[in-house]
Every structure is written in structure tokens, then in C-alpha cells.
Image (tube, helix red, strand yellow):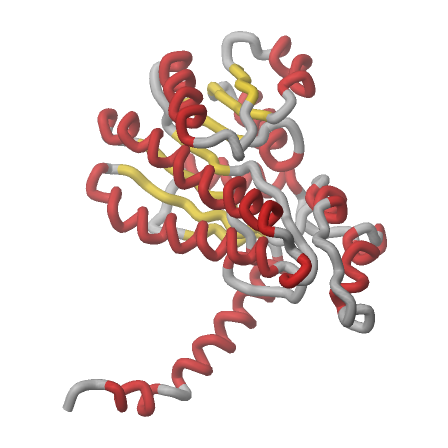
Length: 278
């Protein structure tokens, strides 16, 4: 079955890989990009199956509503919404400026929430649809120097997990994708978005973030082609799983973090009850 996929951020990285594989498989793609000129060759190759709209995820609600409506009008509806576009803001928390923090949350969290809000009526009317949130293992595990990024991804996961419990009765599905580090331009872009390093952090891991992100010896193990293929497979052949973990590094980091959290909660099983009415 050939579906209509709405994907944010198809200019590069995972979004571009998803679009190319879907088009090769006969699906229709409505994609957004900050600079659609990067996609002219792909558009020329698939003029009837690919439509691209310029969109900055900091544009706000009216623009989001218009783009979702344009996708529905172009291809007669949206079967799969992929909230893919995003970036990482790294650095010491106290060095992050308010403008930087707000943009991180607007792009990684608020935009997916609003795009989903405007896509839901179309999907409910048709009684089918899948909403995909591209999170990260950083939506469950944390590293120093990534507080704002983790906040956006933990918020994303909370929103979409709750949403899944709201819309299941309409025949709609949510899939939260948690990839590990992949060989895309994410790390290089993240190196350009570092916050200021306040005095006093010179001897901490924060001071070496830029060099770590640009260190080619730390090449991520995640293959974007395989990640895209796994997402398509999980959408074409759905299971009851809410989350799709991709990458051995994602599995290791997440299970370690979850085990530590669970152990800390279990240790307080008896003391937690102390605040109950007796």
C-alpha cells in the first residue's frame, strides 16, 4: 500500500534518507526544509510523488496549520506524520542564553506538538494514521552538557506517550523512535550551536565538548540508511510497541539509565508510603 508521508526536515540526514527510500518504494512524500533548493534534483526525479514546502520550525502555529493543510490538499490526506527536524543545543546550562533555550524547545518540542495538533483532525476523519516522533536515546538517558537538548527530548516523549493513550480509540497510532548516534550532520551542527562556557568549567567535560563533537575518531555507529529502513518497516508492519530503539549504543545507554532510576525508586518503596493519610 502506498501511503502519504509528511516529513519535516528532509533536506539532509535521516529526513532525506527516509524521503529517498519512500519515494523509491512508490510512496508519496510531502516534506519540509529550511532551504528547499537543496532538493531540486530529488523533486525533478519524482515530480508527481514529492512536494516540498519551505518551513522553519520556529515559524509558529499559523504557518504550521497552513503547511499541514497544503499536504492534505496536495495528496488527499496524510497517512504518516514524521516529526523529524531538530537540532542539539549543547554546553553548560548556566551558559545557555534565554533565546537559545527558547529556540531549542520551539524547534524540538513545540513544533512537533503543533504540527501533530493540526494533523490529527485529518487523520481522525479518515480513521487511520501514524504519528512518528523522532526522539533519541537522549529522551531516556542523559549526559552532562546536554541539559536543554534532553529537556526537549524528554518533553517530546512525555507528550507523545500521553497522546498515544488519547488517540488509540480513533484507529491512530504513535511511534516514538529512539536512535543512537548516527552518521549524519547532527554532530557537526551541534558543534556550531554550543552555548558559552562560563568561567570555572575549564577542567570539566563541558570544556571539551566542541572537540569531542568534531572528533572523527568518535564516528557514530548508527547507519542512517538502516535507521530509515527500520522506521518504514515498523510503520508498514506495526506492533503494539510504543517505542522503537535503534542502535546498540541507544540500547545500552537507555537500559543503564532506566535500571538506575528503577533501583532508586525501589529503594524508596517503604518510605514513599509515609506521606499517605493513615
